[in-house]
Image (spheres, rainbow over the protein chains, first blue to last red):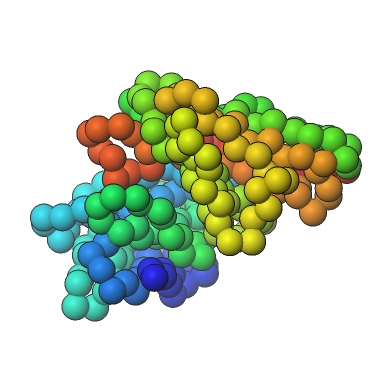
Length: 114
Length: 117
């Protein structure tokens, strides 16, 4: 079975500062990894995903994440955040190939302050 | 591309009534759709997987007779909450997985806020 741990429930940061949201996963098989963002009272929007290939993945809104197989991590980073980045961020994992059920982490609330 | 809609966005109903929520993939075909439930300040919990033309697969602990799922076409899945009670109040989110192309990615709808009085 797979599981996802988001180590920080809340991350406060000042505008234009860099940010890293941490995600670790557990799986005995190969996985696909995803980061989604959720704004208040909305569904989830895909930020980026890792399926295979380059371990550094670039997504929308200036976000990027790096897949580290040895550390079973997929941390999300942005070099300079904006107020509009304030939202809930979810890391998710699914098994590669076949039926792909997403397992979500508990989420990290990113609060960007002026 | 890859737009998923849900209707209604908000619904308030009386206890004991049934509520239907629609999930549509607008610009792609989806053989598989997923239904999630999200409580305030919590993560998404998968309720069931809906496959076009076949019975839904429910996660452990989810009552299939209470949460009826129908996936009648490649662009539409419905979730009916039967005999709703206040404890069913929640944010329900669907997602769809595209046929071909990026089959390993789920695209999410905007969610439906259900309030049962």
